[in-house]
Image (cartoon, rainbow, N blue to C red; front, side, top):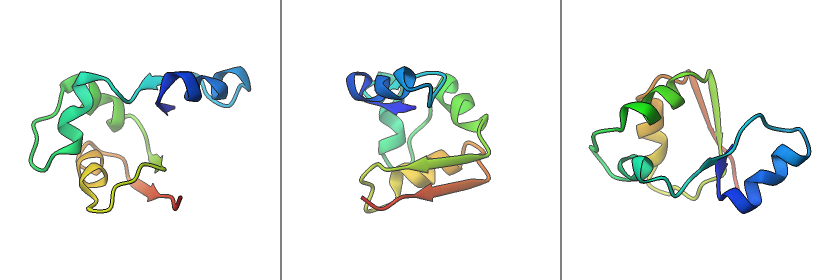
Length: 80
């Protein structure tokens, strides 16, 4: 789970996730900008998934476009 650790850690407690990664990580900053150069660690992180489900508010699709460029076959932008 990528999110705010205090909240996302609930998924660990309920055995719904294997790990929690902080959305405030400095390496993620470029994923929120058009045409950013991505941190290799985060590029590989997103690239390992077949499906990414996002509840992030992303009206311009910047985060979605950047994550898709890392390799996931499917990106689901969930409604909030």
